[in-house]
Image 1 (cartoon, helix red, strand yellow):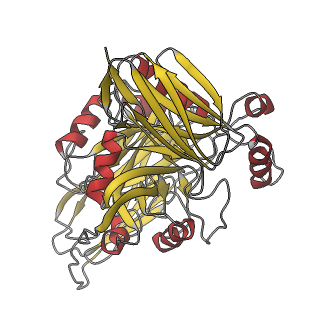
Image 2 (cartoon, one colour; image 1 turned 180 degrees about the horizontal axis):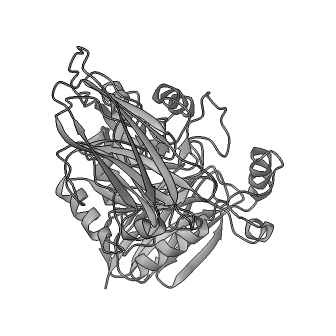
Length: 466
């Protein structure tokens, strides 16, 4: 056993918020236990993680052994098992590092005490989980949630409970983006099936913004410290064939890095009332500047320790709906990148399929356009067509199976939205009931709720060539 006492300061935090404490692991070690102790307060929060001897300074492509952020104050890694959020496997002798994430440090600094224990008892060397590659044949619209969490990061609930929640919601696919770790794949790799395809994901989580990485098996180094590190993040993701999505660019955790080459943007996270009009405004500006970025949505649901009933704050609120030639992870990623789909309020939310000159969402067309938006389940609401200049047409939706049409010469792109009309009072009532009469969350005010249109569905754009 080894005990280490250090003092961290705000100067350390400014120098590098990922403060590493090195320790030596002896030959023959089969388990390492680490415990951290400090005076945690609202203004003093230290995160926790682990690197093995293969790790380098940022950006590292190897050596990650786990991250629990502020959710845990102790963990273990062994050759056959590990604490959720951490990776089991070979424990090479040499110089390991505990990562202390200096999230909040008081003016006087804080003392941190680490206890590190080694065990050499005989244990099996368990391999990492193997991926499965399920494929459900048949083209059609498929529903999923692209942002949720388990107890491998800061949720209380297990992967098994989240799996049940996804089945309860009737989803076809699910991306589990635990914070800064890939340990959740211990469950989701072998349990992906044609009933529910699991998409590889990880949420890169920093003090200046969050982003989801999709379709990459490797851990992606999250230790960003400079605005330009966003471009390094994009390179790391794209070199591995993955997709990068900027998450919830709105209060209370906006994207404060430079904007890298990004494939997607989470334009809708959790209930619409959670500041999502700001995400959508920023997406609109980026499209208007000429960028081509696919719109996706995700609940950011943190699975509790029990299965929750369906409701406006549950899993798959909102739902991303994609047109797939088959249900597989490969097809899901391709549709996300291409923008072949829309975001709707829930698994049973309004349908919204936009075509322009016969081309589906995500395509590029030229010249004057004729657009059709197939809308389902939104009678009494409104359909908007928008381009780079703003709203072009605002039409009442006359039936639950209805098609809106637009002809003209839109600028840069054309997209569509379903806005609550007759459904608005019901949606507000459901939201009020879901927060159980407590004060408004997320620093919202009543004027924010009552002064904003409620979007029920958002299409991806079709791009217009000049």
